[in-house]
Image: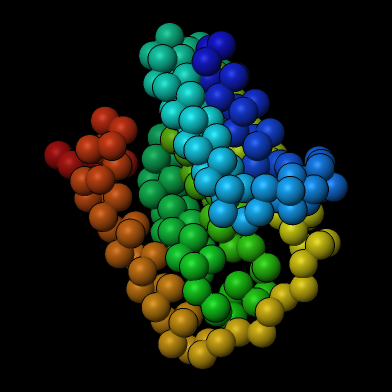
Length: 190
């Protein structure tokens, strides 16, 4: 569980700089320049993500059960992941939903976390997905306070592309990629 907690602290701390230390972050960004900042930030993010994934993978097999997931939990998780993938792809496009929400990716993280809490009741999962719900919710409020919404560009086309892209990603994860990456099939056949 130690590696999971270290990974969570690194990942959430790094991705909370704009919330908890905006002046420090802006000063470092100005001092380093955009390319150096983005390069170091990306490297640190990758390291934090690797530690987080490793920590979860070693903590989960021996994790205590906090609650027994409901029988319908995995089914609800699969259903919640569809809007999560759609919201994630809306973040990549100038669209009406991005205009309204400011940051649909954070909403996608909240749904992703919630979905996985319905499907998993062990300590490692509660720590991982519960912390992401809290972090994404706080970050969403912070983003809404500090940014103005940009007007949508070609909203009908962009909205359609985002919805289509989200459905395709959801299907790819549902029918093989999730099991290949994480060793768990979201739906059991047979």
